[in-house]
Length: 173
Image 1: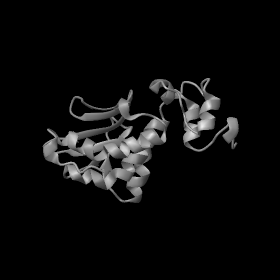
Image 2: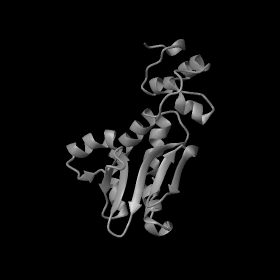
Image 3: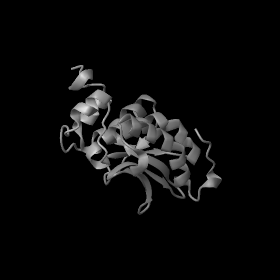
Image 4: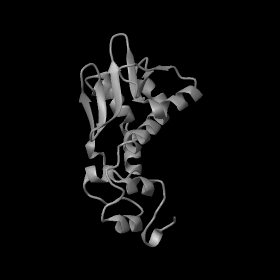
């Protein structure tokens, strides 16, 4: 992993993104997706990390409040198990805020961020179960759909990522 320093970035949010980017990309690759669609963008009051149209996380470093917000469904059980304090808001209930004293604190939550990214990618509504490449994908044990949006929408990609192969020479279910 490349060592990143706060001085290399103009904002603490970009620095935090630099610290967690490798973790997010590892999950994206696990799901046979490409990181080229991963983006950090400034929004009103926070920075968002998105994959295509799905928000993976939100980062905010204000004068008083500093947090990374991740998928609440995936993160809450781990945060509770580790006895880590977090909060959520009525206006944004699908995210929980993990408070950070300084940007480097995010390193302590890489496992939670990883699980949250997995949940976000799994919860993208699938548009179809599989495309015409299903047998080629089965033989390769991964999704080979070249179109990123179609790959994300494919339900069979999720089965392949979980090791369940329904067709071809590697059929196991």
